[in-house]
Length: 428
Image 1 (cartoon, helix red, strand yellow):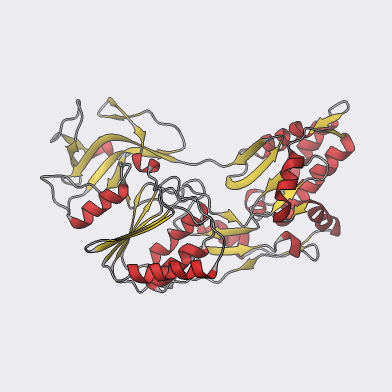
Image 2: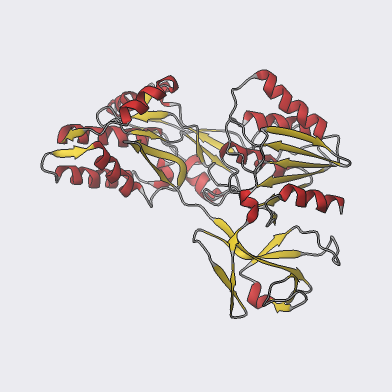
């Protein structure tokens, strides 16, 4: 989502009034978190729906979608979801007797697919789950090149075809250059090195360099992970802080511990915050770390929010907008290295955003998962078909973030232990 989209769809949005029936539909579908086991049990059963009950569920679904989904106005401007609703209704009406809940869910997912890119949006029934997102992945060769001039790059790490020391012209590489951090003998720390590859939605088996196909692999840092949930390693002139998950109960003592951890880290001139493999949880933990490290006290995503569905009082749809806060700067004077990869997602990506507000910060490894635009996802269930669905009532915007793309690193690292690469680079 670009800034112009966020401003147009959310900042400049006008309140809309929906009929009371729409609110009634939402109340029919919304479920409390403590009902999760019960509704999952109900959703596992395959059942048959009459035309009337299937059409009723479709109405409930789309009423809830347009009233409570923060992405609705972005993906379906001008109430474009009504077109999809009518297509589903036609499919139901074309059946002789009715439809199964599995078939109904299939139809809904087929018609939504391609129009929504949101990793938090889910539909599930009969032990099957549907998601609606596309993501990019980095594919790189084993080659590393060093920039000699604007037009010439020297092979620093070669293969059987392109030997070390071979000079390549920029024209043959310009679509594949990906800045990287490496520590190599016979080269200076200040040299500019590049991996050769692509960050793309399409699986890429090779790239063509000077007319020659060079095999690629998914960048190895995507597979980096740590066994421990939390680790604080104090070293000579740096500290390595590893957070592998934020999926813990919210406890004040734990929040304070993360804040204290940030304060201890701030005593070092170099801090490595390792978020590789962190799939998220509660952003309060990483926010507490940044507060201790640098005094920052926000995730630095711009936020637009609809009321939680259980707070609905009438049919008036209005977004509340959080004030712009990106001008706030952190007071940490050292350098923060944020290590991340394609398994860094959701609220862990909110651990990347504040790094942009520090005086010196470098993001390394690979791109994050890219699932942080639409969040805070209540649970719903259609009363007749028992289809479960979930989507965000909030939208989060950051200039450097795109759903599916995620945050991009300043330096890509093709190593399953990117933290060690960063340590060597710092100590070089």
